[in-house]
Structure formats: C-alpha cells, structure tokens
Image 1 (cartoon, helix red, strand yellow):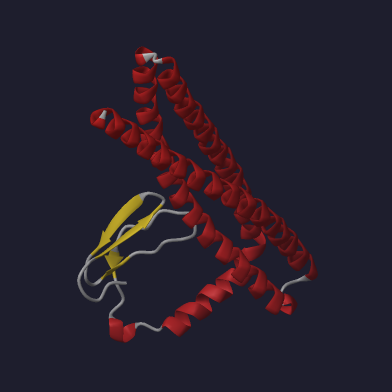
Image 2 (tube, helix red, strand yellow; image 1 turned 90 degrees about the vertical axis):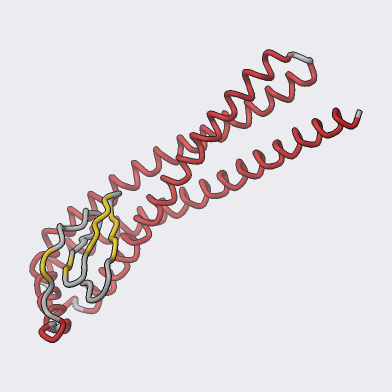
Length: 218
C-alpha cells in the first residue's frame, strides 16, 4: 500500500507502478496484481488482516502444501538445468581463450581474429545468463525463507491440524527441505564457477593489453 509518492513493484519479471492511495498484492512465485484503491490508512487493521490470513492458512495449507512442493521442486530442477548451461558456457569460454593463445603461438592471425570474435559473443551471452541466475537465486531465497517459516508455523501449531493433515503437510515440507539442500549445493558450485570465469576473463584481457603494450614499445 502506497501512502505517499509512487512505488514500483517487480515480481516474475513484471513491473507494476503503484500510485499514491493504491495497493497491490504479490503471492509467492506470482505476478503482482493490478493496483486497486487502498483501504484508507485510518481504517487499516493489520492485526485483523493477519488473523484472517492465518485462519485461511489453516484451512488451505493441506491442499496448498503439495502444490507448493511441486512448484518448488520443478523450479529447482529447471534452475539446475540452467546452472548446468552456465557451467557449460564457462567451459566453452575456457576453450576459446586457450584457442586464442594457441593461435598466438602459431602466429595464425585468422584463427586468432575468429576466436576473439567468438569470445566476445560468449562473454556477452554469459553476462546475461549470470544476471538471470541472480534473479532466479533471489526468487528461490524468498521461497526458501517462506518454507522455513511454514515449517516453524506447522510445528508450533501441530495440535490445530488433524493427524492426517499434519502428516501430509510435514511430508511435503520435508521434501522441500531436502530440495533446498540440493539448491544450496547447486547455487554454491555455480557461484564458484562464475567467479572463476570472470577472473579468467579479466586476466586474459590484462594479458592481451600487456602483449599489445610490449609490441608498441618494441
């Protein structure tokens, strides 16, 4: 809810501008709703709103838990496939840099020019992929924190669920927790790969500048 000025809200790559006196809602892994007239500030009762949301959570969680798990698992699998592409691109960049070095040793100007052009295209594509990786990782961090909060909420309110509902919800949250572990490993390995590739690109650029400087001085 915006009381003064304007606020831009972004989720799922969709941006929504919320003007003064308007409001929008964003559910996890969904787009922002279209702005609507906000409840006047003096009439807002956030505690009452929270009570209603918690009541709805008790009613809907048995049905929503499997859907949340499915979205989370599918998202992590897609994320893993995407990070594999990032690491493959890193490998191709390494190979192209090595090819340029070999072209220099062999004094093959044609191969050097073609490989340098190829490296520029690969580096540009790689930067875009890394930007997408960061956005996706931030989205999963939000979903991960939400799943943590749900685990705590369900554990603290165990007696308010039937035994059958509690067992079902707990099994789905446990599966999500295991998937979070996979996500952390994938993200860590990919971050290490990204840092190494950017370092390799910086060092190669410096190597090229040094060689050019020596040729000019010579």
